[in-house]
Length: 300
Length: 300
Image (cartoon, rainbow over all chains, first blue to last red; front, side):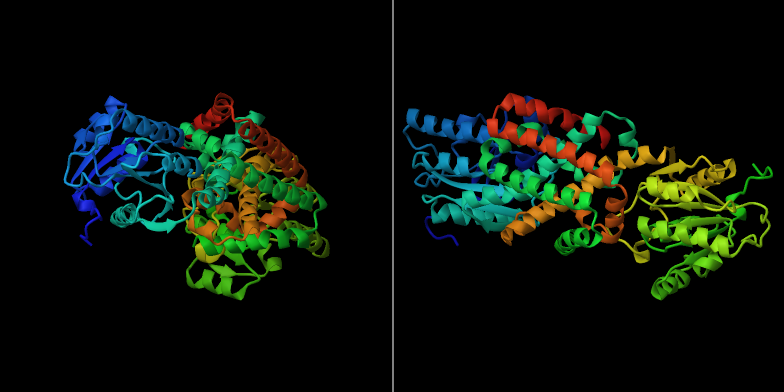
């Protein structure tokens, strides 16, 4: 597919802004699959680690990194929003084409890896036309963050949501799909608002359920609790160890959908509490069995 | 410690009543560490599996199994309660000593593996004196049940709670500790009611949080949810796949402590929902960070 207008990943200079778990793992997964990988990070330790471990080819400032074919914003959501403002600003102050390479007629394709999409896609919609934006959200991660935990295999087999904008070009959509194929993820195209409503239930609600479990246990302040906390507590509370800055940005940029999910969750908890209080075995069994069946079917 | 009055595990005929995940794994962990392992199960398939895989030495009926040195009740809580009633009945109808072996002067030590302890210990307290009862709860398990999932290593490194009764003899306490040492668990002696209050928070509340997460997601009835359900949803919902009969018995025999834990949990959820609604980053961060720190400290 070397038709004019379509950029192949192999020919791309890729700039990754933010070299944490997601950005670092993406760089590792893209090694040898693109022309060059440029890394941007405010942390000298991170840049040093990325360079000495061969995770990136070279470092650049945010401004200098914009001279690329594919710009990947891999930071917490509110940082991405600030970077999108900077993109708009930099374009105003520098109206010449940003890129010096072979594809200078084509706009720089911009994709982000942010966990909520409505606000990001809205900010992307007003970028100058030299940028060709598309929203992205790879559905992976782990509770340990930072480039030292990056893995080339992090994205393999995981769903990678794409939230195109009305202005997203076919070239950007095709390159995003090629990127997803190269790193071994499974593409799933969704409108940004629908993405945010779905992950409010499958990702943000689990985080709040886990954190609340920790908060309730800590509230009781009894050290014997931790002696009887076994694998069930460990797994149910795992997400409470997630990076707080990342989660804070998620909670603050998806408030309405999260509050809807929480309302539903609390209603269901109240219902189960009432059933336990009544103590009718048949009624309780009928409430528990469908969830047991569905969970067993979903994850073998 | 071969003093008179103390039974060594190596000399014991052990009867395990209930050959599911817990009973089957216990039999595997006790292979070669006691005189004989007798298995009791109502399921011919389970007995057949246990015999052909060398998990037990022989099978017996419940009544016949009582002729042993150590009787282990390894069933869901309400089944254990029914078995304790049977023990009382069988002793009334058969006032001769139950055992024919070397230790016939000594009562049969009875331990259970039930997940809640207050009702079981209360029922144990009124057993005839030929039984020497002690409550037990090994803090392990997995979401897959049944003897086909049994593992000799299931108990290794796990906390094994003992809830002695006022009538529990030193011999029973010593043998229970030897059993715990042999299977590689860590003993933790607790009053039954305190055990139940603690596990309401560390085990039963996580189960309800996981099940409610499944119920909320199922309520929305959107198949796209499962496409964006990643490892966070998988782990937070894991306990929803637990055996329903086991969990039903737990919920029905620890209602007051569970309702207390649920009330605290819902209060904390309401608090977080209000903070998300307000959207003050500093307030939210201050709420999330202590849980993040504690969870990271607890499970490395």
